[in-house]
Image 1 (cartoon, rainbow, N blue to C red):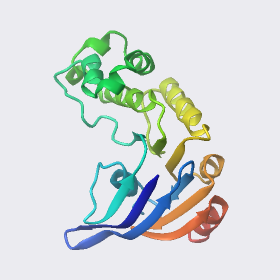
Image 2 (cartoon, rainbow, N blue to C red):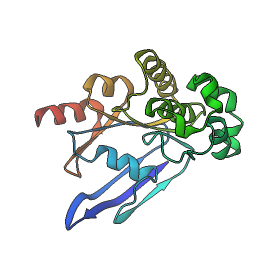
Image 3 (cartoon, rainbow, N blue to C red):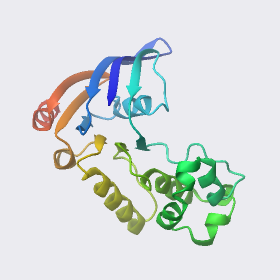
Amino acid sequence: MISVEGLTVEFGGFTLFDDVSFVVNKKDRIALVGKNGAGKSTALKMITGVTFPTKGEVIVNGTVSALLELTAGFDMALTGRENIHLRGHEIAALEPKVVEFADLGVYIDQPVRTYSSGMKSRLGFAFAVSSDPEILVVDEALSVGDKQFQQKCFARVREIMEDENVTVLFVTHSSSAAQEFCTRGIVLDKGTKKFDGSIQGAIAFYESRE
């Protein structure tokens, strides 16, 4: 479903991501593991088209739901409800689910420019999880809203990830979370791929280097 070939990112004379390749097959459940700055989130952003590589190619076949840049693409002059329709017919058809999940009350019909950062994230998260994606891309560093809403978010992500027909790419620092949700692990270090294999092998490789 996803082919990543020779991804390289160069900036200011430095190579930030160096010739990384891997294939994600349908129904794969892959954890991207590595320290801060390893390139995990950069990889996800290139796969979802948020960031573009200097060299290389990404081919994605399937509908993608990405929990990354939650507030990107909002028109701040429009209301929350109007932004739902701005995202296209597919999302507009899911309006009741988006509105219910975001749980913004009367603010859903207020301009997004009046929202707090937390409210914008709630709406963005609701967009991302209201559809039934074929590919789910999750950055674990995500934290949305108050504790109660965070629990609601994680419960929905867990529900999607537990669907055996969904392909998962999951960035995490947690070995236990990686092993709970994923069967394959890719270890990144300073923008290079160091290991690609079973999740148990990936965790063992990563922890041996700490």
